Image 1 (tube, rainbow, N blue to C red):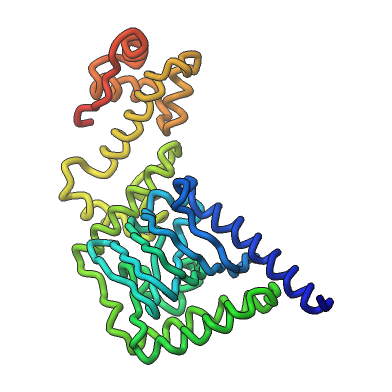
Image 2: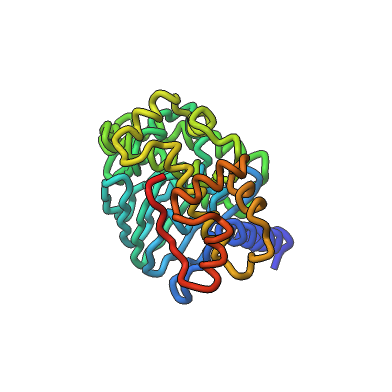
Length: 320
């Protein structure tokens, strides 16, 4: 084997192993045995991450995506087989030749049959400047029969054909080019419709709830802080949750109390002080915490802990 050919195989194997490692980290749980996807080739550098997958039939949902990757998207080209994707109430069937842009920050359900797919990982921030509609659209499917999709397909063919030869500077330039090629394909495609106002409100609620649950332990969590965190005005937040049974901040307090209660019920945490539990879930005033807890659970935190350890715990909070 010539030195050039040997070097090509060495680079291909190294790039494929790097891709395998990256895509394994994308999921926070390992897939069940027999349902794992096989990485045929790929590349994973500082910016560009991509892989050609051979999928066995399986289901992937938003809950299985690791938290650090939920502000990203996957742009996939279906080479063989068929898949179906559901997000924000819309369901699409993806067949050979179709592209799918999937936003990992929103709940989704992807059912994949036996198939081969080429996928590139794109942080949402990379897309925003060129494709601002990504923020307000559910899953986008570009059908292979649309003529403009051919430009994007040609780019994919070149990128994946040369995966073994990619270097970091070249890979970075290619990543910057992809949003522009995607924008060109979308210009003549009828597949990208604006989300309806109802879908937008539903999406914004999901965004707010996820941000809150990720930041419950922050004592500074308030409506202004939440609004800044998700890019929505405080006035719109209050309007958004006005139709709910409890206001936004009452729901935040309820979620904090539920998590405090779970820790108080846990025998393995019986040596953890009540104050430490309360402060850990964002309460900054113990007297206020005790009043709220008694109102929600009908007992003081200390009484609740003793009752939970020696009798059946109570899980449900009243309206707080």
